[in-house]
Each structure stands twice: as structure tokens, then as C-alpha cells.
Amino acid sequence: MTQLPSSGTFGALGSFSQDGSVDVVSVLFSTHAAYLEHLAGPRHPERPERLQAVLSGIRRHPSPGALIPLEPIAASREDLERVHPRAYLDRIEHISTSGGGRLDPDTYASPGTWRAATFAAGAGLTAAEALRRGEGDAAFCAVRPPGHHANQTESMGFCLISNVAVLASSLADQGERVLILDYDAHHGNGTQDVFYHDPRVLFVSLHQWPLYPGTGRHTEIGAGTAEGFTMNVPLPPGTTGDVYLRAFDELIAPRVAAFAPTWLIISAGFDAHRFDPITELGLTSGDYIALTKRALEWAPKGRRIVMLEGGYDLDALAWCAAGVVGVLSGDDPEPVDMSEAETSGGPGGRQLDAISSFWRERQHG
Image (tube, rainbow, N blue to C red; front, side):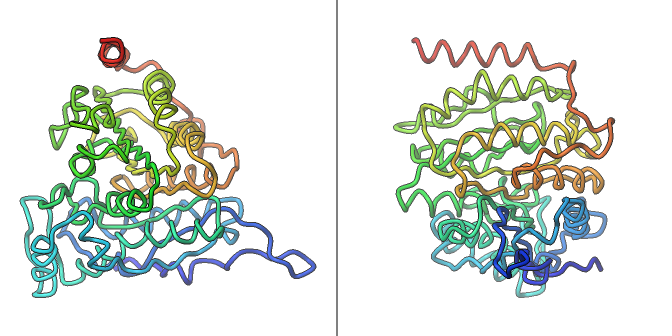
């Protein structure tokens, strides 16, 4: 079994200057040993070793002991019921605590799943409270199971509780304007469903098309008073980082500026990496560094949280996690080698032209 320390045992709580005062440390790092208790099944890609890979990447940070360990607190039922009805939660808890079983065709609950899921959902809430208290400039939550496919009443795609949606709902209820950026290779259909009619949250997803779960067309833009508060950027297999950056600059940045978010949550799926075994996009860890740098411009320090979603190649997970934490720290991280530099020259430009035209027509229509 993979061994993972709780965040309370991960490194020292800050570093100390020679006069004994605590130096300012900017990034909260949250994980928990409970996440290892969720077992999705033999040979399943969403496996405990994913967290060990993330930790191995974090240790490549120039000052890993300078990250602030943050022990997550499990989300309460009240927290979870902002998004999921009680009957849905009862079913997951019952199946898990009764020995485990299949929740849907590709999502399984083991005896430790319910505990892991409540700590995963609680990690973002704990991080937000710590950031409000001024304990850091940003937070990275290395959680599992992931959450962005789970809608209000259905588990899907290895996801049980919509971790990011639980956090965003809590922030929105406190009067915040929340931007969710989802750069997982799969469309965050569950997150989209939760906020499709909610103008307090701007949801942006860049993802491979076609690919599971088959949602995320560029014409899915929200409904009612939230029309225009969902932006989908479906991209073809092989798309490279230059197309992503163009989408950020031409499509997403103007919409973000108009929305003026007070918080940024990144659904950090690293399965858009070219080595991922279940997707076909063309990004590298260098691209994830560049994308995260751009995204951090959209929200103030102290109001930025990154939450792990997918990513199933262990080396890619390590490289991408290291790069993103470096960006959150205010460093200028370099990819592990030249093969992980930013990419360009792949497909996707034509699709991006069509999406840009769609939004211009909508704006001037």
C-alpha cells in the first residue's frame, strides 16, 4: 500500500529566520492519509499511487519545507448538502460503510471511501478559511477521489462528491464572485450542472472533444439569469499549449474581466498531459506552468485555490504538480527537461476560431 503522510506531518510549519521570527510562506499544501483509504478497484487508473506521485513532485520544489502544511477538516453534512441532496449522500455513505460496492458503471466505493470523500470536499473549505485568515497567498489541495463529474444526484467518472462545487457554493453564499477554471482533459459536467443557473459563479472548461462524458459543447453557456456564465472550449486530440494560451487571451480573459471574480478555483486535472493513458491531448508540464501563471492574474493573492482532479500518468502528475506549486509560490519554475517545454503547432486553431466567432456573435447579437 502506498504510504502518504497527513498534511500535518508534511514538512515543517514554515521556516524561521535567524532572529527566530517566522518568514512569510505563501502556499498552503493540503493532503491527508484518509485519501488512501478510497480504493476504486484493481488496476483502476484512479489509484492511491497518484497522491504519492504528487508528493514526489512537490518535493522537487526548491524549498519544500517552506510550504505550509494544512490539515483538512472533513466537510459536514451541511456543507455537502449545499450541492447534494441528503438521499444521495446517504446512499454513498451506506454503500461505503457497509463494505463497499459499485455506485455507477465506472465509480466504486470501498469501506474507506466515505471518509476520504468528506475530507476531499473539506480540503477546499479548510483552505478558504485559512486564506481568509491571511495564512497564505494560495493553496494546493492534493485530494482524492476527484469530483468534477459528480452532479447533484449522480456519481460519474470516478467522482462522488463535487469537491470544487462544495467550495464554490460556500464562497458564493458568503457573497463572493467565484471563477472556476477547469483544465482537466475531461469536461467538468458535474460542476457545470451545479452552477448552470447560478450567475454568482463563472465556470470555464477547456477539454478534449470528443471524449467522456460527451458534454461541454461550446453552445452550453448557462441558462436564465446565468446565461453567459458558462464557457466551454472543446478542443481536438493533439491540441498543444499555444492554442490553450490563445483561448485564455482571446476568449476567457475578457469574460473574466467583465465578471471580476473575487476568488479563483482551479480544477487541476493533469490528464491533458500528452503521456496520459486515457486521453489524447498534447500538453506538457511546461504548458501547465504557463496556463497557471495566466490564470493567477485573474484573482487577488489570498483568494486562489488549486484542487486536484484527474491525471493518470504518474510521472506527468509529479512534473505538473511541481510546476503548479512553483507558480503558486511566485517562483518561475522550469520544466524538468526540454522535452517538457511549452508546446505549439498542434491542431485546435480552427475550432477556436469557431468558438470565438460564436461568442462575438452572441455579444453583438
